[in-house]
Image 1 (cartoon, rainbow, N blue to C red):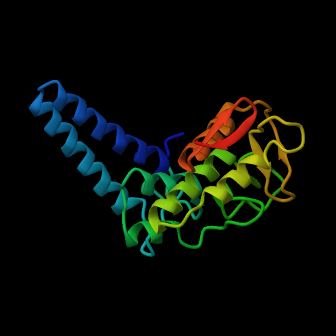
Image 2: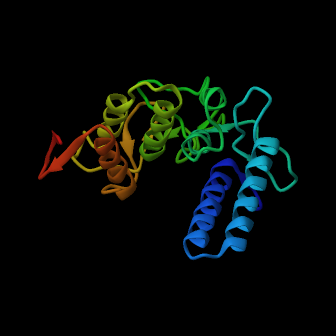
Length: 203
């Protein structure tokens, strides 16, 4: 595809830092320094090429190096959660992104057509990352909102679904979706809850 996405590059940044720690733990000082330098260079490149002047991040750069006119919830969330940005920069990275009862759109704005899967949808696990990033950036408690959005992806038939149609708020596509269920469990843990059988309780 030859795209450079914000989300993937943020993950690479985190991976390079992990490699640096692993090398240091093994006594490989030169390799640890190399990985740290690579991570620093990548972070600089992300901020230079994937961040707009208002502090928000673009969805991706295309094969010609042109920035997408759209934003993506996952990329913005990972930039905050993985410490590519912090403080006021983290707040600016998330500012103005839609969040309502239908959820967090996967990318924004949507395409003006009827295609629906990534377009016209919110993905519950992405919403969980986005709300987690909001909590980290602002200090506000987003656990209730996160749990409500995640739970609505399984209210109709008792199974976590892959996506939610942003136009009508209905869950759909794959049932028994593990990354949606994992996002729900993660939000429960961050909120101090446990899953006991089929019941969510305070830990």
